[in-house]
Image 1 (cartoon, rainbow, N blue to C red):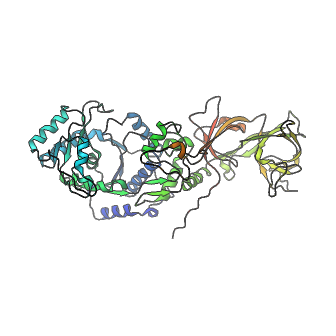
Image 2 (tube, rainbow, N blue to C red):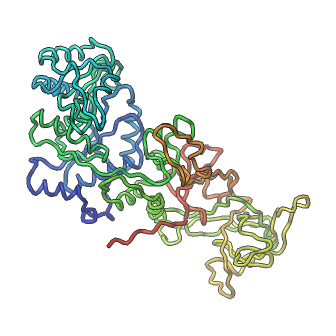
Length: 562
């Protein structure tokens, strides 16, 4: 996931400085190692990509290693389909990390639990979840010791083995750390280390019926894999003392360090896994790959490239706290990437017929038009020019307002890559008065590339041959949420929060015939309309659907760094 435009010296952040000091002081007798530990219960999104980018970039900077480890210790939520989806997304980003599974460490984690029990640092507790909440106390009141806290080491060891053997029902008992019920950090008030879940695991089946909590498994998994720096998002900062307590009590050598960075949020996007699930399962969007979602599957279907994402992430640096980034910045770097690689094409969204009256009905001229304005290596394509054409409705005005320089009666314009045309007559529907077609003449001396310079026109219009054009459906995307949307922790009324213009379908667009051969691995600039790609979900042999990736207009300005 390297980016030549993001040299190491450009991202000397607080994490890099810390790791650099560790390397210089020989804190570890092993290479720098980082990891990304997703739970396989959903799909990756742009915030996930940010975490991946930070971990991978820092490991690469110090010539270290980067692991993908699935945190699969909850059989109630996890599924192999998410494992495959996450691996596919990470490979799409351009990475091939070493892959590990937390469930593979079940024996070692259980053995760590036994060690804590033997040291008198863990005990089996019979309190119900509701009772445990009460005993835990509040932010202003200390917790209360469990009545089972002083069980003997022998009793705790025997009960834990019974838990493993399946002698108890789900939630009947838990294994807790014995730390400090009066700690101001709630995470240290005898946290649960193991719970009973009588459910089949997608990888280990029914081998286990007890599963470690993430805060217990996480540091052990890091140590097993030789991770040096466990870089995670800011919400885990209050969990760091527990991470360190586990490693200290297990007396591991050269324990990994947990350090935190801020989460990435983007204006107008939903980046919470819970909220994304609400949108998908409630039917408010078109699945996890809806192009309006910031999931990597959604961005991919929309037509965003891995290079575009890398450009964006490479400019962000590392946040200390959670940050809200303008969605225009993401669009800017997507656009910068696309404009260098896109093939040009002409598409008319709202067709208005033009008849070239001084061109015979059987005449079709093939015009060679460059595939890119600035890159000759992308070659040319042949576009048919014929008597009947389509232009955009908005490109004609019968009574032009001041400043309107496109087509109007008696006015002359250039057709892109073709000729000058002049409007001679307007045909209207006698019943409604609506304009039906425009009759024009063309000047054969004005062919593009001919060197004609005897007169100038103020506008160049895109167009499509009516006889050769192909029908298509265009999907235009905008921010999913309204500017005023405020998400609620308890109850989101998505119908009121969603931007009604987040998806606009143009069902009767006409495209130049070269688009019949459009492929899903290529992006296109539809002149004046933006960057598009073939929709992988709804395009069929008889239906061509394009998604707009971003518009051409770029309103985001890169801040000047002092």
